Image 1 (tube, rainbow over the protein chains, first blue to last red):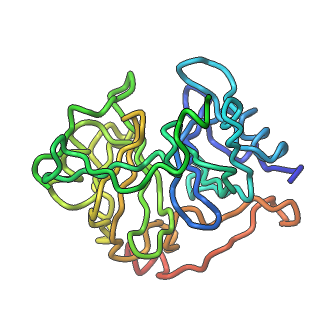
Image 2: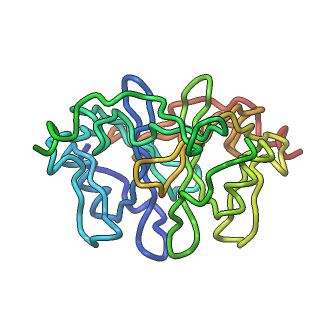
Length: 130
Length: 130
């Protein structure tokens, strides 16, 4: 995937597009992040999902600390050319909590604090970051 | 869903969170939009996905023009409390092009313009917007 059509993308005023990552096998939505132009190109060319961290103002290769990389399998663009859907193969849990997906809580008026956990921890966080 | 735990959400400097909408049945990622506090509450309470349009600076109930609403089935939050995954039942095509999903083009170095269409038009746009 060396000829990624980067010039077609419309980045926002901060030079970013939102990118949602979906598990290519289970179709689970794993996370959302933001990418600048170079993060998109790295995601396409290096084969691992790379975001631009807005809080740290630096590249953030997902999994660089835990080893739980998201391997790029396909990159789709929306009709407006201003957001991406990345299909990826996760090496392990995407969430730093050890859940497969960062979206492991669902709003539920019957839950004590308003959220119900809907998915288990796959790998304990201490094994991810030990 | 009247007791949505809105105060748990962490909105960005513009008062927004990105929200990805996934088809509750097919698990297809349909679109990404941004929501402010009131758009999240409307999505939860009124049962239809409502965004905040950054370009028009107004509420945008998805489907308000075409009738192709996204009916809210569940709202999930990520580990950082700063993005949402909305599971929805689409009344019809989500994309204004008539595709089920806005992500109907995939980067492909072998495609003429760099993008390959991977999904068909479900309803011709002229039937959506007459």
